[in-house]
Length: 300
Image (tube, rainbow, N blue to C red; front, top):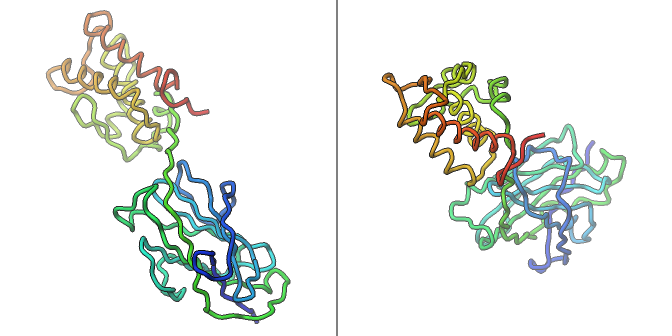
């Protein structure tokens, strides 16, 4: 028979069993998928058991630009079987764990650590550096799964809250890949359509352009680099304002030098005045795609 005790995070601001706020290193090895991108520094509280305030581990809260992460980590004497997180941007009464909207149960496979993701899209108007979240972090623990013994079960008598101010984080700029990568990894962008020079090309059409030898055609020299640059931004997440003007100029060149049917390739001589202008733009895009200059680095 399993013995389960319900615990909660409690903090000094609630006036119950004072706890210490700590800034920890970012967590690792959590059980939930984590959104890519920069995260704030974790803030941690004790995972406390009942009025005796038995410390059974930690609950750490952090956020990126899209999500708040509530990570439970036990000290090993007990294992997690349920987690229930309530969150609001205004203070509110204690809520029974079963009524919390962000929950997970894994009674048959207790875990030492688990992360609950709270999407910021659920809180329109939340602003980093300004919005305070009131978070209730409940957990059910199995203290026999790890060979320990539970002294007593306190039931759902916990009323502590975490007050967590949403932190501002700077998203990492990502990295860039060359046209050769995108040409040989079409599965990475199989559902992506691209607009080149004001004309929309399907994935198959854009891939066909990439696979067409340039043969001295400036429109292909430019479009190969432009496709790679746009995929680096739209798929690879390599955001950089340093290339925006060059991309806009490349699109303008394609629009101004289109042939009668308006779709690539145009057959523009690379040694003509128009061709030289296109290859100059292609060089700037090529530098971006190779991680040179002021933009994001090339992917290792």
